[in-house]
Image 1 (cartoon, rainbow, N blue to C red):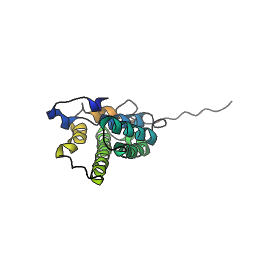
Image 2 (cartoon, rainbow, N blue to C red; image 1 turned 90 degrees about the vertical axis):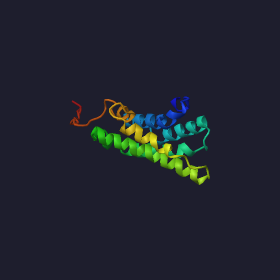
Image 3 (spheres, rainbow, N blue to C red; image 1 turned 135 degrees about the vertical axis):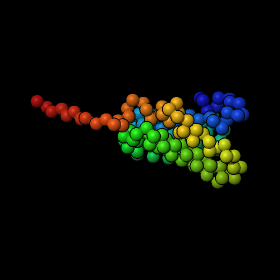
Length: 153
């Protein structure tokens, strides 16, 4: 898992939230199969792997999964810059909830570098990870949806 990959000290601030990005991608790609339960299980797995408070990431990822699932049809219609902002919003929600849980259990507050990864992922240009999360080929931006009906003869 890329979350536990060792990085040098200077690159720690730029580590993407891989688990959140992968969860958002799969909810946008397969909303009928991936939902809040998968988000919660992913959060528990991240908590166990990283050694954080059990449930800290589970709460945040379950909420991110719910919001992404409820808005997946709208997000697909957004232009790329709005899709990137939607991903930024979801990443920030995950960070804010994790920060809130850390404060609730009296853990020391993280440095300002804690808030850099969501902005880096959103604003790093066309090569950004949010671009790959939202541009999976299923985006309907600028296209007209067509429906096919079948009748029994």
